[in-house]
Length: 231
Image (cartoon, rainbow, N blue to C red; front, side):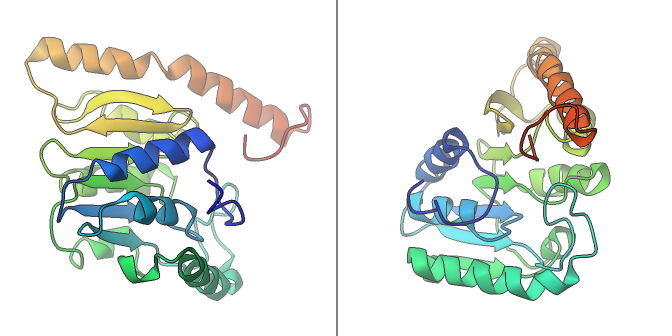
C-alpha cells in the first residue's frame, strides 16, 4: 500500500491485500487479467505480487468514459492524461515491463487476449449492461478452479444487479466472501441443487449491506450526510 499511496484510485488496504493474496496464488506461467486499470493502483499491486512467470494483462481503453463514480461520460479531455499517468505510475513502481496494456474496451479485448485467466479482476464500467457482459463473457474464460474478483459489489447498483442476474443463480462460481465491496469468487462450485442454493443464499445475505450503501449514497448526494464521495 505504501508503493501505491500516491496513485489515484479506489482501493482500501483490505482490498489491496485481497488482490495481493490472489495474485500470489496464481500458478507459474499463469495469466492474470484486469478489466479497468484507471491510473494503475490495482495493476501495480497485482504485478508486484505475482510470480515472475505470470503474464499480466491490463485492459482499459482510457477513453474518458466510465472513469469512476459519477464520471460516466464527457471526460475525453482527461483520457490522454489518464493513459500517460497510468504508464508513468507503472514505470515508477518498476512493473511496466511486466504488464501488457490492452487499450481497448473489454468486449473488444476478448478477441485480443489469448488464454484462460487464472485470476480475473473486474473493475470496469459499473453500469448494469457492461458489468453483466464482463461477468458473463470474461467469467466464461476463467480457468477451472480460478479466481474472479469484482470491485464495487453490493455497492454499485449496476454491478450488484449484474451479480444477482449472473452469479447468484449460477452453477460455476462459488462465492468465497468479500473485502468490503470487493467480492471473491472461485470457479469450483460443485454439487447439485443444494450447493447452488447455499451459494445463492450466501450472496443474498449481503443485500442488507447493499441497501445501507445505496441509502448513504442518496443521502450524500442530497447533502443530508457529510461524507466523501464515493462512499
